[in-house]
Length: 174
Length: 451
Image (cartoon, rainbow over all chains, first blue to last red; front, top):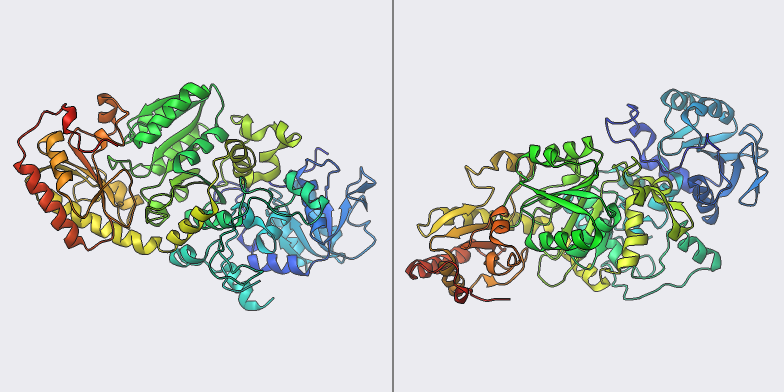
């Protein structure tokens, strides 16, 4: 799977990476809303290899109650779920399309998402400004250069148990 | 979820708010508002699959308190938040934290460029580890960035300095030194114990790793020993120079920490391997006290720095004093660096030299009534020590000079008492020292209180 991009590549440092203003695609409110409302997540580029970042994310999402739909043309089944060759081939409604592919593959995936998904979520390092803008024109919500596992753990899960910064400040019991 | 809660997710909260709240949400089961002390070694797994996922590092779950503990985690997140890092790992002491960072970043044959004005205990630690672990260190005068550049070798893997040197008061040009480190593909690690994140946040100036002895100002009350490592999450540990972090780990079935955890790779390695193996974890009770201390860090640091500057200014006017090395004084050689990196104050630990050398210093310490003579800094109480006979006793004369210390140097850690009372105390000490006949600088008998 040479075209699969590792999930948790370091996000580019400000002024030192893609040159894309990522802030509009990393809004914490949008991220939290997607994580709490989504039920079905298609993982594009999901690897069957347990040590790959995409597998970590798919495994984690499944453990945390999401229905994971693998998209990988080379596999028949991953994480106990039927694998589809493309987003267009998926036979059920999808809330979030989570992308582990190289940036060049993103425009095509965006077009396939239209009418099939509510949001497209591009993992760390999967940055494509024009495709993100096009996705918004198509009515999709867009998250870019964030890891869905990390953001779930930050907002709803246990990232804080490992001493990581969640930036969550609240006096509410929850 | 309400709109208000979404708003709280995006608000940029101020430092004082984060000092009180970060890492410590109300405990969900009991509603306890203070962070509970989770005095437990281990945690029951939900099911066998959860246990497997935790040990494979696929899920974030508590396993064993040597590696993680909810009370310790609340403290870790608070400090990581205040420093602007992606996370933190707490250790049993500041030196354990440093050792943990070395163990994680370095391997035998590597080379380190370090400030020669480091805390004496750090210098001793580095020299021991150098011999036992097979890496090499070049110590440089930290004040001139070119010195760092000149010491770089092909096998250099780490730069290490202190935000404010102990006890010389050297202020590190973090931005310049970090830029040199990054040009050579290596990270800059900074001991920021004397600055605390309230006075300076090295990660914002380009440093990659910050270590603290939390025993000092973060805890703030001299009651617990602890340390912490914070990392920026920005350093490219997969640049080819750090196979110990980037290559597949045999301990986790070939898991590649950097490729899998990305910005969290270094800290995951530090926790899941180094802390696991060294075992120098912070106790939950100490983490509780450190978290409590951190809540008042902004208030205390304001008072510490204001008192320290007042005391230092007083000392400059005294005939018994040869030299005052407080980097915040007018005319300090570090004035420009203080203005840039320490605009809220240049810390509360500084040294001065008494005329009359070692014997005058001994008499001075003997006379004090409010300042406590002990080997620590960063307490709410004012502290005093004579480095040549205590903290830096392991160093020979040349090393002492390298650290900016003379036989008559006195180090103060100025507390949060009434400044008039501190000046009253010091004045009595100075007058007693002046009445002492000039002493033999090398006399062992003149050592006030060997520890």
